[in-house]
Length: 93
Ligand SMILES: [Zn+2]
Image (cartoon, rainbow, N blue to C red; front, side):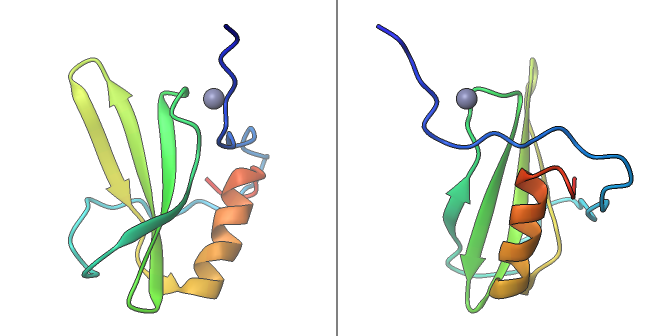
């Protein structure tokens, strides 16, 4: 059986790409749901999380010792989706 990836992978970061402000997670939004995510086959996976008219991006790095989670600050959803697209295409990381 051939296992195919169903979710997107992030492109390689471009030179001079926007550096996102990755912070320790804190519960800034209630009732957050993931509306997009990258493939879990990579050591680093990203999730777009939305709630209450705002959104942020969560980064989960798989380590031998467990998970390392970081999150961006919140943006309005439209802006967060723009950043999400930039992340997928390597224009932000
Ligand atoms: Zn994959």
